[in-house]
Image (cartoon, rainbow, N blue to C red; front, side):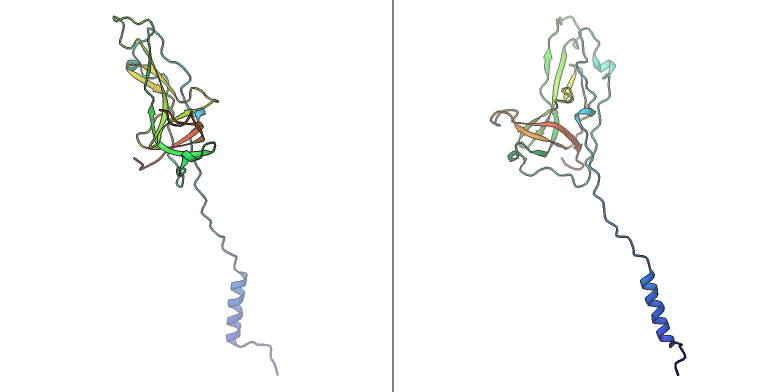
Length: 196
């Protein structure tokens, strides 16, 4: 006659099965991609000419504003391969920031005047292994400009010593063979650690 009592071995198996079925499922952990960090033309602190005739040397007074820092690139941000062949597309171009040769404007300065009488302007460009790339912003035309005098140049961005990654719409200037063959419009930038 059946008593309704399960053998001990079957009871143990039942408990194990119940424990497995009733255990909550572990959530699947997925690595999220790092958020990309860029600085844009709107972040530039240069708003226009800062030097007028008769002002003291900027080296003694300092720039009237702080240059905007360029953040470090997030992991995974890489330059576009063969970017020169992608005219009309958004590209990420690797290079270093430099000041295009300064233009000195004579403003009625006399030999007896201070050596800082002249006003000096410059433009920030991207120097790549394939030539210089002009950085242009219609939303903020002064974003990549610099101003000052022969003693000090003040720019809207604090150019890092190493490489930067600049992303923007690539356009060709003229036939692409001149001193400034390319331009990136509305570019955003970040610094690349360890790239020299």
